[in-house]
Amino acid sequence: MKLAIRVVLLLLPLLALGTSGDRADATPTQCSQIRQVRRLAIQQGLDDANLATLEAQYCNTAQPSAVEVIPPPTATQECLDLTIMTRLARMSQGNSNLVRLVETQQQFACGLANTWGRAIIEYPNGQRAKIGDNWNYPNGQTAKFGAIWKYPNGQTAKVASRWYYPNGEIAKFGRRWSYPTGQSANFENLVTWACSVISRDECASRLLALRNTNDFWSEMATLELAWQAMINDK
Image 1 (cartoon, rainbow, N blue to C red):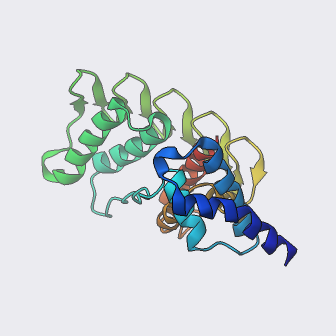
Image 2 (spheres, rainbow, N blue to C red):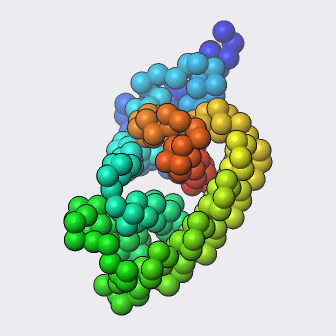
């Protein structure tokens, strides 16, 4: 009960701001305070719509990120590879021109399946995207070589049963997960922490992709969730 009172007391000045202030006047400190309160509330099962509304107002998180679409079983290998590349590029490069170049190739590969299957594919900047079965990013960095996946910054993303974050820290080895800082965590704690940092709506949309924790696409979605949380938590 005392903890519940503490949360309410912390919320009172923030709720007052929410009714009288404007998001343009919000400060990073206010956003940080709101996220600290929300994290405490989640841990104690006290999360409610008021907290999500405040976060959306002061942390600019009103629009949740769209859940990544998994290619259908009938998708070509080019569609599968470029979908993976697009998601790895977004994690490492945000919304850069490099990401948009990869995404454009992905849209063509997944939308024009009957016209693809070429051995050599090039980006508009002249950089070769595909040579044989191997892929490169528009900056010339290897994306896929054999069974090894990499980020556009050169860091390894996946090899064998190991996943890595864009900062080089191991994300998953076998069935064991880690935070982006390198500290070990079980799956439930990792997801709980991530969802306490990102907005509630974004968490809800991303959790839809985590149905099978040992599935390739679910593992990638978990990686994306944890990495987004680390970015938001800075």
